[in-house]
Image (cartoon, rainbow, N blue to C red):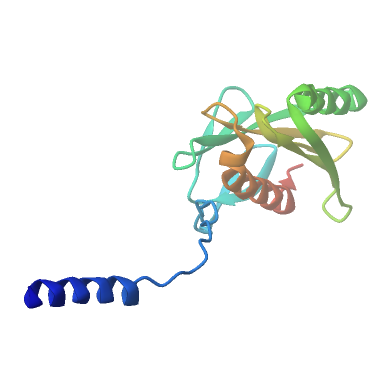
Length: 186
């Protein structure tokens, strides 16, 4: 009986000593951290304009005066469309703004950021669409006399703003790079 008492006492002692009472703290919800590489710049030359774009993407003509810059790893693309100005600048600008604000019903907010570079004759705006809209970014740029270029970002998936936010921010940064390196051809 002494052995049974000794074993019982040891088990009880181990349980008491090993059980440290600490407050239970719930773990915070994990968020996936998506980081995309910076990528080098490549040139896109057309008969009307040129610019630099992220080499991790592929740029292809998509019809007459339209281009697609595809990001297969992100399942997204920037769609570009060029038009000559033929006395219709205000109509082109209004159409571009209207297309951007058509997403207002699904968007939480649309932030319009003007862009002006008088040295290169580039004027326009970037529209950041926040929320579950089909397009997360839209833009237009013009020289106000001959050239007009519009662009928009689309993902090949159902829009879920929280999920695509890192990719949308990455593509929006690439759009800024496109606008800043854009040069019109005479």
